[in-house]
Image (cartoon, rainbow, N blue to C red; front, side, top):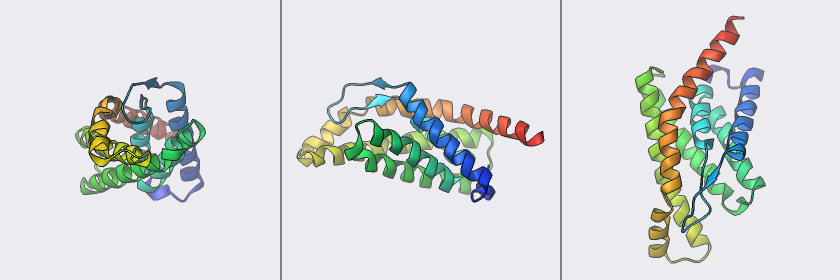
Length: 184
């Protein structure tokens, strides 16, 4: 939506606003899930990050996600693995924006739903590999890390499903609000 305005004051302000909303969205509502690797929890940070990427474009959406998700990790006891979270945001942003470009930025309901599903699947894959790396960081052998990472995926799968459902809804709500504000 705002790909052409990424260097404007409006683009910078909206990027900061999305980063804050992502951070608050995780901080306010998170449900911890027991896992063999890490301390995963259910939250809406990924959904909000995908919405930011779709609305702000790859660069600013990715920055909002890195600041929001990475900032949360840094400030809430996940400092050692915050770089993995930020790397996951980059991968999701590259895949989603690449697919969006392949769709010629056609933001029909069908295309946005496909992008949200792709984001959820991408997040499951990146979280699996991030969990393997996290387990390896504490000295676990590779085979054990791979199995433990697999059994630590339930929170990620729930987050991916909520992203696939909620990101399209949020995208069209944000787009509608932005359009109404622009008309004033």
